[in-house]
Image (cartoon, rainbow, N blue to C red; front, side, top):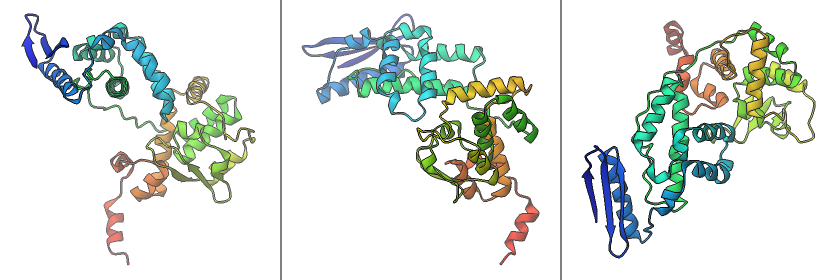
Length: 327
C-alpha cells in the first residue's frame, strides 16, 4: 500500500508498505516523481519481483556509470561520443551520490550549471540522454526495479544551435596542406566530396570500396541503415592516393584523433570558427545543387528525416513552373 505526503520542507515523500517485508520510502521534489516511484514498487510487488532499495542506496552514480561503460557502451556504434559523455558525468558532484538519492532537482541543478557554463542545448541533451539510459538500464537489467528515472521530468531547452558555416575551397586546400599528413588530407577531401560522417570514414574498409563502380558501401551508419555512397572523381583520386593497409582499413584513424588533428590544422592554417562536422554541411550544400531531389540527396547523405535537408533545398518558382509543363 502506497501513501504520498508533503513534508514541511516542501518535498514529497512516498511510502510503500509490504506485509512482512517492511516499508520503503523516498523523497522527491515533485509529487509526480513520488507517485511514479510508488507505482513502480507496487507493480514490482504484484509481479513478485519486489526488492528492497538497499542496493540502490549502496550503488553510487559513478559506479553505475562505470558498469554501464563496461557492459552497455561496447554494444553501441557511437562509442567514442558516449564515453565522452560518461566521462563528463563522472566529473559531476552527483556522481558520488547513491542512485536512490538522486532526484529530478539534482539533475535540473546540473542542467542549470551546464547552461551557465555556456554548454549548448544539443550537448546538454546528449549528456542527459546518456544519463537517462543509465537509469533505465539499472532498473530494467540490473534489478533496481524501484528506481525512478530522475531525467524523465527535467525540461530541456530546444536545440537551436544548427551551424551553417560554409567552408570555401581555399580553406579546404589550406586545411589539407596544414595537416602534415597525406592520410588526413585525403580524409578531409573525402568528407567534402561524399558528406560521410567522421565515424563512417573512420570505419571505412577497402573491401567495401569499389573504385570501378565508384561506390563505397557503409554497412554500419549512425541511423542504423546501411547505404551506398557514390564517389566523385575527386573522391576516387583521394582514395587512390592512399597506401593499402594490411588491416584492411582505409584510414585506420580514430574519430577523436581526427577531431584533434583537424583542430590543430585549423590553427596552423589560421582558419577560425571551423569544425570537422562543418565539412559534412559543406558537402551536403554542394550535393544539393547536383541532386535537387530530396530523396536522392538523403540516399547519399544518410539523413532519415527529410526536414533536416530542407535548409539545403531552395528551388526557384520559375524552375518549378517549367517542370509543371514538362512531358
